[in-house]
Length: 143
Image 1 (spheres, rainbow, N blue to C red):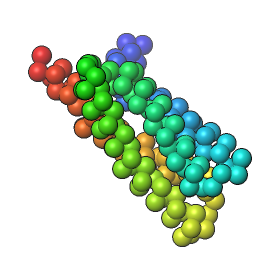
Image 2: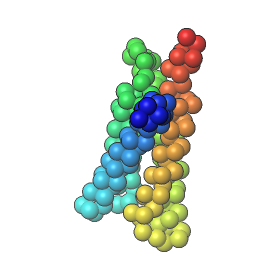
Image 3: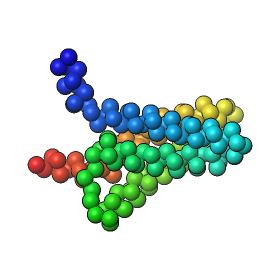
């Protein structure tokens, strides 16, 4: 039991990212599916799902995954901007993956939405850990 607890403590950030990554993906898929269900276009559905899932991801990643200690209005705004820009970059790549699957190889958009979400989750973790929430890690390592 101690080994399990030690592993959980050691990999807490990755476990929390995985949990909230799955929840973010569910937010994305539910919003995308709902938007498609009411006959919004693939483009509008994708953008709407992306915006709401990125907002959910920022709030959960800031608090429960990376434990951001950023304070001050300007610093928080900078953190938000970096987060959204990183998500925009991966969102564009995800969108291109979706378009490739739907328009180039003519497969189901729901399947390709899931595929692009997997790519986006992994890319977002790397960017969040190495770029967006890096200051917190640097401060901890300096102590």
